[in-house]
Length: 235
Image 1 (cartoon, one colour):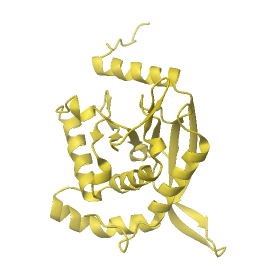
Image 2 (cartoon, rainbow, N blue to C red):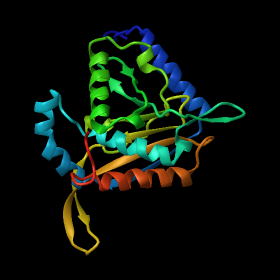
Image 3 (cartoon, rainbow, N blue to C red):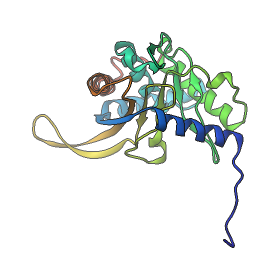
C-alpha cells in the first residue's frame, strides 16, 4: 500500500524470531504469578543507593536483589535450572542467569556466569557491564552463551503483568514487573500502603510441574520480603 514501509529483517532479528518460534512450538508453556510485598527491600535499597553510587560509580538498581533471591532459590530447587534433551532432562550444575537487554531494534540476552557465587554487588556490576556492552555494540558471542535460567526486567517499562516466552532450551523464565504502591490488608486487619511487585513465571511443562514451580516462587517471595539492612549484605 502507498506509505507502507518495508523493513529488512536483520540477522539478529531473524535469530530472535527463530528461537521464539522454536520455543513456542516445542515447549508446552504454562504460566503462574505471585505478588510480593517488597516494602522492606525498597526502604533498604533507597537507604544505600547514595553511598553505593559514590563508592562504586554506578547505580544499584532493584534487579540485582531480585536475581540474588532467584539464584538462592534455584540452589534449593535445581529442577528449574534444567533443560529438555529429548529422552532425558539435564539439570545444570552451574547457575548462569540470562538477562534481557533491549535496544531500539533488537533484544539481547547476555549471561551472568556463576551467579550463585556472586554478591549483590557482583551481580550489579555484571548487569551494568553487560548492559553497557549491548548499548555500545561490544557484546561477544561468549557473553550470550551458557544461560540456564532467564530473569526478565519487564517492570522497567512500567509493565505489571506479562507472559514471557521461555528462552529455549531453558526450562523457565521469570519476569520481574513494576514495583507499585498499593493498599494492602495486613495480618491485623488494618490497611496499609505497601510496595508490591508481581513475579511472573513461564515454565516448560515437559520439564516442570506447578508444584515445584509454586514452591520455588514461594521461596523467592519469602527471600524478597525479608531483604532488610539487618539480614542482607550487598557485599
